[in-house]
Image 1: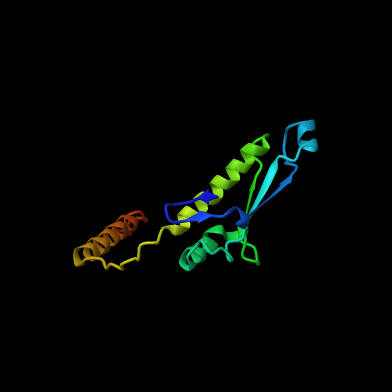
Image 2 (image 1 turned 30 degrees about the vertical axis):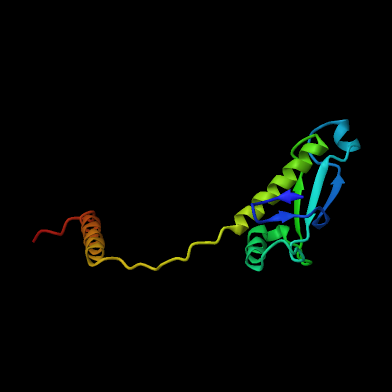
Length: 140
């Protein structure tokens, strides 16, 4: 059981772990020991996640969301298989925690009359400065 929040906990049957050899430095150990973990969470079929959370999770997961509706997290940071498992579970929990936060609705605002006036005056001032850079007018 993976606890995300007080309300949301993910059952073990929803998580699948697959171990592979990690890439990068590590000598003979990397070639022999399957330390990298690929954690698969069947998010679309999960009865523990509310529908709005699933939608936000799909958007947040990006490329990690598969066409079948699963989230795949890969961890190969550590040389220890147990530590990589822990890292992958933490990343999944953090991703779901971020998906539980409802975004604040944006209230459109308009600039005040004084702000518009200041903007136009600043543009005029800047234009005047640039105008003074040119060659002086010819004297008759």
